[in-house]
Image (tube, rainbow, N blue to C red):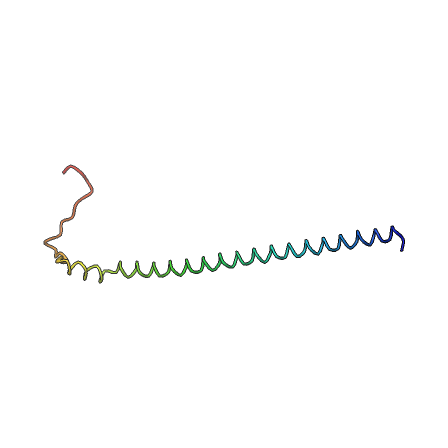
Amino acid sequence: MDARVLGRAAITFAVLMWSLGLVTWRQSRALEANRTLDDLRRHVSVARAERVGIDRGIQTLRRRVRIVTEAEALGMHTPDATEQVFLSAAGGS
C-alpha cells in the first residue's frame, strides 16, 4: 500500500471515530435533558395536586355552616335585628 493511501485511510478513520463520538455525546446530553424535563414535569404535577388539595381545604374552612358551628362552640351567636348596628361611611354627623 502507498503511504498516502494509508495516511488518508487513517485520517478518514479518525474523522469517522470523532463524528461517532460526537453523536454519542450529543445523544447522551439529550437523554439527560429529557430526564431533567420529566423530573420537572413530575414536580409540577405534584405541586398542582397539592394546590388543589389546599384549595379544597380552604373552601371547606370558609363555609358558613362550619364558621357558625365553630362560633357557637365558642359561645357566640348570630345577632338578631335589635343587636345589629350599621355604621355609615359619612363622617361627622
